[in-house]
Amino acid sequence: MAHLTAVAEDVTSGRLTRPPTDEEAAAAQVARLDGLELSEVLGRWAVAALDLEPVLTVFDIWPAGPTWPPTSRTSAGRSG
Image (cartoon, rainbow, N blue to C red):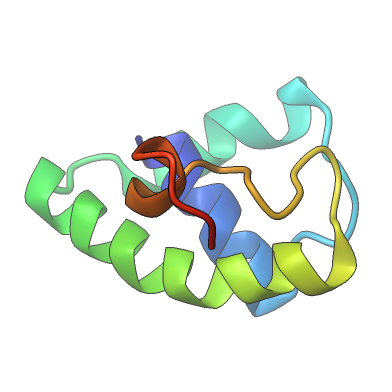
């Protein structure tokens, strides 16, 4: 969850402008959120996901698209 949250934060803040290699990003992103309670990480995800979804939809960014990451709506079989 920390890695997914950090990716969303990095994309929406402009820190991530290309797909990083696993070596570049995953460990650093997880470390950045290390020590936070799960509820704090989930709260940050909720905020970042709201900003990330329109970016993914408009720009059809790698490897995501309008249905990735799955939201509660798409997971439930509803669009957008």
